[in-house]
Length: 137
Image 1 (cartoon, rainbow, N blue to C red):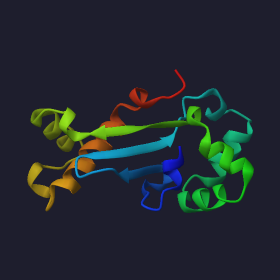
Image 2 (cartoon, rainbow, N blue to C red):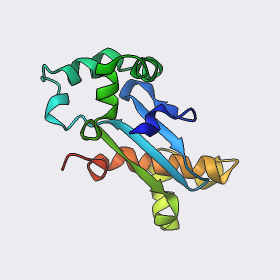
Image 3 (cartoon, rainbow, N blue to C red):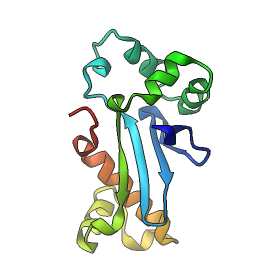
């Protein structure tokens, strides 16, 4: 989970605390809280749940506080609390890539660079198939 503290991390969906790190023009690491984990369920009254609610919508503060606050650092470092993995767009057929784009209202020609298109394809897969990215099962 050290990647969350990487200088190149981007916040792709602040409300969901979703993060992305570009690995290459075809591979992107995505991460967001594992809301399926018992400690992060909506009715959970746990330290992890309180941290999640405190920082939802403010990923920059989460990352900054993880540098100095041991409780926040423990949350960020606990792989079980995160959905995450590297996604390589070359693992999808052209048809699958176009479907992932169209599911979000994009077409192949909407992008000026392959890397931008590839990131959206990876992000859409990450969002549509969150259970594929669980670390706690």
